[in-house]
Length: 216
Image (cartoon, rainbow, N blue to C red; front, side, top):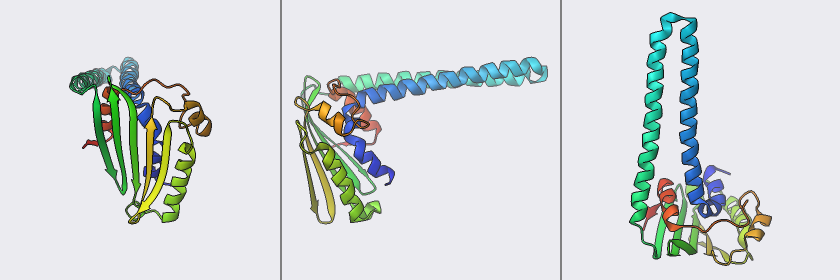
């Protein structure tokens, strides 16, 4: 199974925690950059004491590392500022559609939100076996597995269809009535939280755009 099939399999769960994932990844990247810069600086200082001839070079490397650290921090701050500005311009009530096309795998997400909280969502996943380089049997197996996770779960309506050689998996999601415990029981790795926080539209949008989705 290629990376696009795996991505499609867990896409719904990633959407449920878009904001958390974005914040955790951003914080993790900034922390890792800072730690790497500090470790490199400590190593250079130790080497300078052992070999004075390398002292100037070590100082230059330390300066470069400090600049790298500052650039990473500034980039992260600018990104947060940009997201905050963009989020402030987003509507609090309404509907919005986002679409992602990638190697024969197309995902269309429609959000219904009020007071910035998503209460309904329509998700359509389209799979073109030929463009994906997969057999119809492989796609059918994938859809069967996906459907088995969501079918019959309270708050979710799952349907599968085939038209003109393309397979479609449609999910209609009612966030106010989802049985999270049942989802967790069926796929604990995909749905580790049995009582997740409400999905905010303003927090979902930056992650969608970062992942390549285009507003329709």
